[in-house]
Image 1: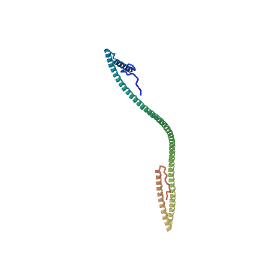
Image 2 (image 1 turned 45 degrees about the horizontal axis):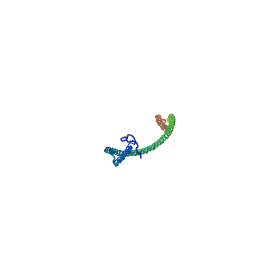
Image 3 (image 1 turned 90 degrees about the vertical axis):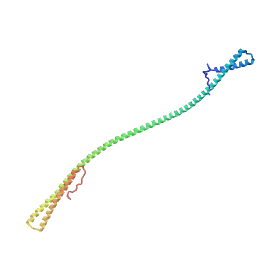
Amino acid sequence: VAVNTERHERWEAQQGDIIRQERSNRKLEQQILKTQNGNKVDQSEHDDVRLMEKEVKEITTNIQVTHKELLMFQQKLEEEVKKDQKEKKANQEELKALKTEVEHLVEEQASFSRSIREKKSSYEAKLNDFLELSNQSAAEKMSLEDEIRRHQALLTSAGRRSYTAQLSAAESSKDQSLNVLHRELADAKTLLSKLDEAAHRTQNQELESARNGCKAKVEEVQKNISTAERRCQDLLDQLRGRRDGAAAPIGPVLQ
């Protein structure tokens, strides 16, 4: 335990005054006892002795009070020292805990920094890959769009050629079919004319029958020509209405 060695400002002018006063008091007490035992003092000395005893008693009382105050002060000082030591220990433990926490936080920060750098590097790499793929996709898209436009142009051109070919084929089929029918009609009319001339010259049942059959054939061919012309015209109208390039089947006009 630490002991206070500094002077008490209330009772000491300088350090050690109280101790020196105690020694002086004990010396005076011894002298008083010696004087009382020897019966060699007079009345004047006896009064001095009483004054000295009174002074000694007061000083002794003051010393006792001072001792009590010193003990209380020392006790309070010891309590303060213990409290300071306890607080110092608590502060040291808290400081140690704070240092440990700071070290942990520093390690965490370093770990976070490494993780951030790694993720940033990974992000940049993925971003570069994405940009590269995006550029490739854009180039491929442009190429595909160009190819689609080219094929659309080819398809449109092919559709137009197909339409023109179908129209030409339909007109050619019409002309061929009608030509055949017209030749067949011309032949039938020629035969009918000859049969008519023969019938005027000679009355014959077989000739009349042949003449009637020829007339029926002429009527049939004329009917077929009308039907073929109507069907050809319907097909041509249908083709002219299909200008999207879709192919329409072209069969024989005359069934």
